[in-house]
Length: 470
Image (cartoon, rainbow, N blue to C red):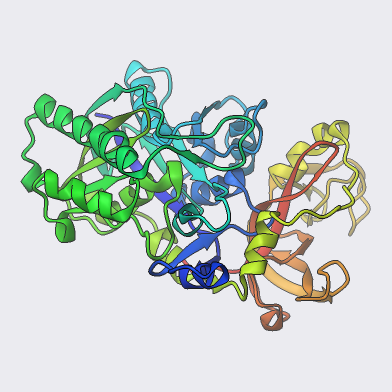
């Protein structure tokens, strides 16, 4: 039996209240807040975070497949999944794929992963879904859309949920779309989109799954579903005869927002985090058709290693001090910015050191050091090193605060970090209150999009205050 071995999520640190958005435009603000990706984040970096959360206690070298699902891929012509794979520490032989341009990319990827594992092509496949959709200012979408990522690991061993069966169909409907030339998601007519594009597709998929499996919908534990808007989701539950308060997994609209392709997987992770053994869970997503997948939880659902999960990510947050800061993060304001110089050749040469955070350990004195050198910093031995992957946790040895590069609003902390397990790195800190930075502070290393130079995305590592796992 193929199923889910582990799960993980990631929500950006920053939140923006919908009331603040409404106040800027003189319009009603919706309830709650939405998650806002930092200026150095994108769908790839959020997928790395969710992937780490999912692989807690699991050797990434044992994962032989990775599928990345998104509608907001940083590259339109270049595979994005290999960047995620190398950052997570997967083997170079791991198969990687991108599933893009559809809101049901995550559920379709799960179906594909299940088929490959059943066929014996792969043993462990990590599916990561993330989205960071840009909404037009002064629009309903601007309040609806949030940013986030979710990941699930599929295999045949140590399962927390068995994948029992699935049903899918396609339906060509022009309801929600974005062409190559569009910055924002386009809509037809809300009522038509909701009734025919969203509700029509989801209801058909779930009823098809019911007919195929014979399940009794009133007895399922949770329905985890993508959504057009929260009211449409409640209507789905009503039309299926479900109790929305008990059987509908919270998609976290009031705290995170509609996160696109990752939305149904986030609801699924929320259901898994709060499930008991032997509960039936339906995962459903729409997008020019729909997927519906039936899972049943196992006794291992309560035996997973600690992770941040939904609760940890919700607890770790900061409130944006202004709508203008959101505009800055999204780079909506148009101003000339000098582009840093970058070289694809140097990137190719140093990719293992930069993306995989590959260091070295001296065979003579045992010192772990970074970046890679030929002469040991301590004992001066030459060419006597073993490659090691640096840990992603440590403590601040010393730091300084830079007001010049920050533009003067808040300083950027530059930190020298002693890593757990050895090695010292010099990184900027993100997602933090600069006033709280201090020597000895525990930090986590996070994968970020540092800048766009040389015409491509330059990914590297930053640090942030440590996130405690539960």
